[in-house]
Image 1 (cartoon, rainbow, N blue to C red):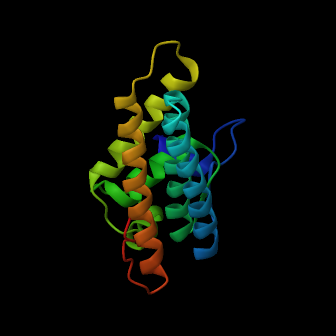
Image 2 (cartoon, rainbow, N blue to C red):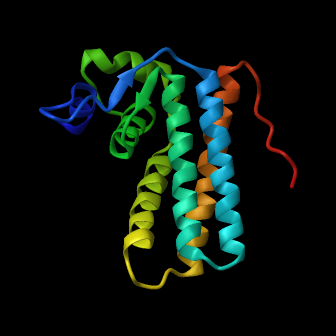
Length: 172
């Protein structure tokens, strides 16, 4: 059984960690709001040169944007690992899935592998920043922060499209 199957089915003492729910733009928007708050926190942490917290907040911003994308297709994730594998499978990967999962693939907008790569990179860097003792550089922090901005912008576009609107990037 692969990870996606284990997330949907659970195993032994581990409950299901991907739950089929009613699609919800409102829940997606709530997660995007939280993503944007985390991105603001990351920006502030970066200004004060707290690079480990820049990475941590940027990752959580991307995680909440991922959760938003899942609510749009009718899924709620109960773990980071399952949220990421569902996002990668339904939004990014071009592979066949079991017939039970095709409804999610059909609902998801195809995204570039860049987005799953940046999410994985942010997760890895967040783990190093949270649990490691080495120095985090501004270059590492800025990469995750910029990836987070791009990631959230792309998910925001998808939410706007789901609502029937066109996303127009605001002027800085």
